[in-house]
Image (tube, rainbow, N blue to C red; front, side, top):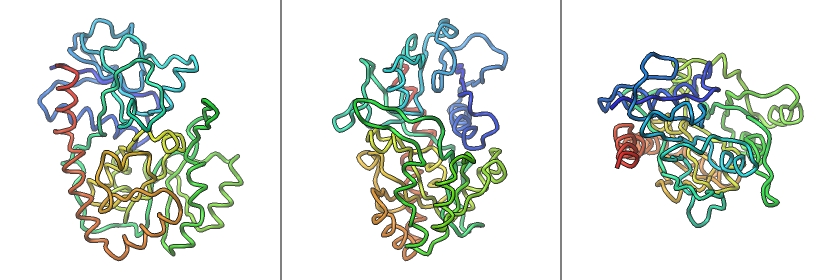
Length: 322
């Protein structure tokens, strides 16, 4: 099969965003398919994976299977409801990493679309488990605030900065080192001062994780991940799970992550621990220190069972090609 992958506009010059696309490109290639990115030559395809609706559907009309891949569940649907064109129309299938979209317990509107669920794939051979770590700290990578919050039915769907505020005292309470490779606007002085006061360390993600190779080194070289989720993912209970966290797991790095509803769909407790507040995060960090080897082994096993690109992408193709 000839597959066209359309990366999101923000994927350039962001190591993690580039890897999110590469997992699909390399994963489809491992399954024996011919894969091209937008901008490369080739005009006849069997399937297009339009990530975040980057290209308008009319530009893809000649391709029989047109898959919209939603990597920002809750936000894409709510923007659509506010009249912002997310290019939902014109696709034959709609796929989301929000495992709970369209299920009881998740209030995100589906707008009459059948959302096919998928987990973020990881090409495991590119993310081998590591026996040692270079940075004895819990880390993560991302943007403190990607864009504005959304108001819907009296509920505010916020950004990572709003989620991080609920964990401010974590370094003090655990005596654990936390390093955030996080893009932070200089205007966020109040949050910057609070993070510094409570012991969080911030590093420039462009310096430590700006390319696919440096991003992989930073993730796999960390002791574990502290997964900070956008507040909108948490409050919507959409079941979003981070492609970044999947890479930590594949590297044998345990993940302690704010629950977005993913514990309904993934096993948690060893290797991956879902937290709801600062108290549960403190308990998880203490348990991780006491049982690190067990959690590290469980992390890799979880990646092999749930995020292996061979399995995830074969299942996805089966759903959209049936």
